[in-house]
Structure formats: structure tokens, C-alpha cells
Image (cartoon, rainbow, N blue to C red; front, side):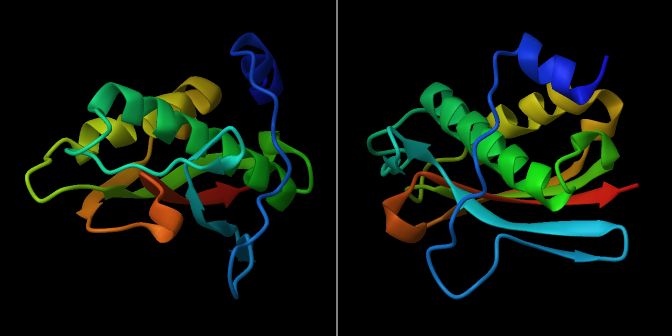
Length: 152
């Protein structure tokens, strides 16, 4: 099954490339690797502002991380010249989770993105990962995620 068949099965429509909010580009390719800049969680087109351990829980956070992964897929689609089948491997995901000092489930929040990447790409979507709790994310967003992929 192609990546696009899987997206259709999951009822996912790829969004356009996210517009950078500061002085950077959405992605950079060097050799066969493409590095996607951090994408923040959005809800109803606005930053999904919340802090874990204060006003958002892990399950809702998984949904936020999944939404970020969909945005990342839109940017990755652009980076591949419109052909996600060029993705040989999702290499690494890094997640910044806006958390209070006592919240410790950053890894579970980030599973929302990791699980979706696995569903879309199968074994090629299994990746290395870091999930950090941070005091703040740009625009108060609850999650920011960046991604590295290998292209063929």
C-alpha cells in the first residue's frame, strides 16, 4: 500500500507547507537527508496554547502531537517535490512539550506523532526520538516537533 493510500485510509488531507513565524525556512535538504523545522501544535488554525500538568492532559496532548505530525507531513510532501513515496526512512523526531516541572509524560504525548508516522510509513516510519519537557514553546503552544527524514 502506498503512502497516499494509507493517508486516504486514515482520512488525512495534507496541509500546505507551514509558513515560518521567524527568520528560518520550513526545511533544508543536505544529501539524502531533509531536516524539517519545528512545527507547533495548532487548533482551529491558531496556536494550541496550553501547558501540560496545568491545563491539558496526556490524551489530549497525543491528539495535539498527531496534529503536528500531519503538518510535518505537509511540509515533508513539499520537501520531496510532491512525492512522499521518496521517503526511505523517518530518521529522528524531536519533541518539545510545554510542561510544568512535575509533568513527566512527555514521551506519551509525543507518541501521538510517532504512532501516526508508523501508521503512514510502516517500518520506514519507525524512528529514533527525543521528547523533552520545556518551560515554554513559541506562542504558548503545547507541543513543538521537528523531524529528520531520509529520501531516496
